[in-house]
Image (cartoon, rainbow, N blue to C red; front, side):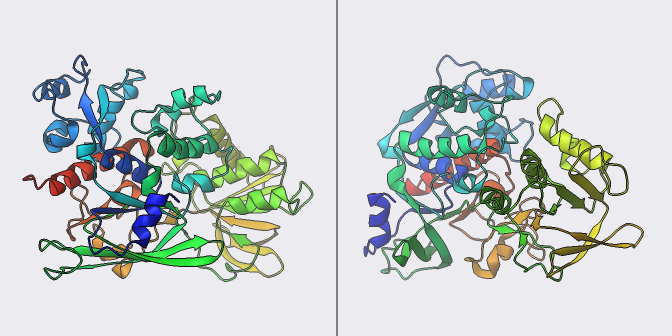
Length: 477
C-alpha cells in the first residue's frame, strides 16, 4: 500500500474525498489514470477511418475528449458492445481493429494536474484485481492488443520484457504483470490501497455543517478493513462519489445440491493447480470431475490434460447447443478451446475412448456428492450413474459480491426483482455517465454495468471521469 493511500485511510479530516473506487482491476486502473490528470486529445493530424466520427472530431479542435459531448460523438457507431461510450473510446484507441487493421490510436495524452481529482482505489489484491488469481500460463480469451490500457500497448510492453504474444494472445500471468506495471509506470501507485476489504457502503443527505458538506448531494461512508499480517485494521472513508468496479469473480456460482460442502468439492481452478503442485493428483489418481461447459471448465480440462490427470467432464447442455461459448469463437484464434469442444462432442462415457483419460458426460444432471468421493448423476433417460472421483471442480460461472451494499445491490439492477447478473441483469446506469439511475453519486463500471471485456470497460472509465470532472468543476451537464 502506498503512503498516500495509507494517509487517506488514516485521516481524521472532516473533508470528504471526491471519489472512492471499489475494485482495482482494469476498470479501476483506467479510471484512476483519467482522474490523475491524464487527458485525451485528438492528434492534430489524425484522420479517423470512420467518416462521421472524423467529421465530429474536427468540430472541436483542441478540446479534450473528456470535455466533449460523449452522446454526440458516439452516435452512429456500431460494434461488439452495447455501450455507445465503450464503442467510442475503443474506436479512438483502436480505430480499425475490427477490420484486422493495426492503425495507431488517434489520441494523444497530456498530463494536466489541474484536471486531476483526488481519489482512492481499494482492492483486495494487487493492482490488476482478479488477474492475479488466474493460473499464469492460461492464455487470454481476447487478443493481447485488446487487453491494454491507454497509452501503453501490451505488445510494446511485452517487447521490452522480451516476451511474445501467442497466436495474438497473451498469458494471464503476463497481463497481471502488465496491469501492476502500468500503475507504477503511470505514477498511480499513491492512489491504490491493496488488501482492502470493503464491508459497508452507506449514504444519506448530510447536515450542512457535517463532514465538510457544502451542498445537498449525498455523502457516502465506505467502511472495511485492511488485511495485514498482524490482523485486520479497520478503516472508514467519507466521499462524495463511489465507483463500483469490483468485477464478477468474487462469488463462484454453486449447484445447490447435497454434499457440495464436502472437502473434495471446489469452485475455483486454483484448487486443481494446488493439488497438482503438491502431488495429491497424479496420472494414477481417480478422475477429476469438472462440471461446466464454459471457458473456465475448458481451462481446467486443458490444465488436467497437460499433467495427464484423468478427467470426467460433465455438463447439462448438448454439445451442439448454439449457446455454448465454443460455438461462438473463431477456430483459428482459439484452437485449444475448439479441441476441448471436439473432445466433448466425440467422447461420451458409453463409447470407446478416442481420448485416453477423458470422459464426457453431456446432458447429465448432478444429483449429489457422497462422503466417500462419489458423484451421483442422472442422464437424459433418468438413469442414475455413480462415479469415483478424486477431486471435483464446479465451474459454472460466478456472481459479483456486492454484500457491502444494501440488499446486496439488487435494488440497483435493471430489474430489481431479479438477481443481479453481469450478463443478464447488470446495474442500471446512465449510458453516458455510468451513474446509477437510482442513486446520485453511485457509479458502476466494467462487468457490473454489462461491459464484460477489458477492451470495452475503458469506455465506462471515460464516461465516469467525464461526469466527475463536470461535477468537480461545477460545469453544467
